[in-house]
Length: 469
Image (tube, rainbow, N blue to C red):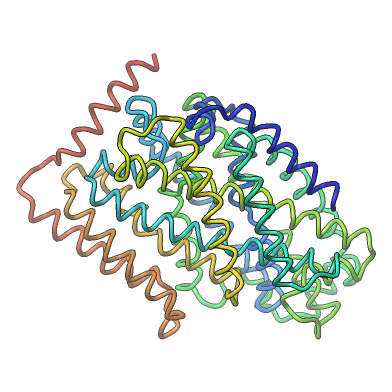
């Protein structure tokens, strides 16, 4: 494990030599091929926290725990089918933007850009905050270090990787991480099912609900899948690879393949959690993944540890880089210092990575349910994805309609999540209900059949398609 951690960190430190300006550091000079896009996106979307959380959730309720990742797959494929990737690529190529809020500013206005910036910073800070805690659950017992102290150490290592590596470094590191994640978890899943007595034993010893993907109910599952899926229409991870791909074809192929890998990978930790429920029903659910693997053999325990740490190290630095991109482009350059040079932006982005890493690690220590925190974070962002998709297909959507829908829908989802889902209702439903009502009413009150923002988008798209020929 020490060799693995040191080795991947050194890759990031080596990559810093190639990150000489802000374009290279944040969007890899828009030159990633399909394979790099696949590995970068797969690594960003499959987090260690969600991997551990899926095994825990599957131990408690069964295979329906996969929906957080299957929702991501839905989001990836909708991102391609609805042409959202082309929207981001066109603005990136023709206007030099590098972040999601910058795109919202061109399509709507500065107010909407600020609202989007706040939503993204909140969502990705929540996602990052869960990673050091998940790492501590593996590394703490392994090295005999108290969990909270280990979380602080892990947070420091993750922050160092993000500060040094930049997007190019992340892509290269994620090639290693993805290989370790898939290979290790395949081996542990196979060994876990055999250790529990085989597939027939699982079926005979667990309630049928454990093999029902619609648990606990339809509304909750739809909220998980749809909320996660539409949130990825405006996710900085999917938009980031659209900005960074060397072509539309490379970006779309990479996004599609990443979704395909996620579809299969999501089942593996869920199966381990189900096997642990049969083999060790008294086991604490929170240690289902590592507990099951280590009970088989030290080798399986080591492989499970490697898979989770690889997932954490592929996600957490990328998430920090996403937050830094948003703060650098939309706060520092957008408000504080519009004339900032590329070198000044690079310095500021690295400072932001360090600051968010420290703050996120602290707040992660307060988390209770890893998986539910991640699901809530995605549902906070869902209204922004829905607004974007509608605005690209309904030319009449106005900047006021987008702004108020985003603000009120996003605030309601956040409040609902932090209030621990009142009445057992997922944050997606009140957020979409009120947010969409506001969007439709304010848009219909407008007298313009085509909004100025939609006209700008069509002009930029025409330029992009002309220059791409």
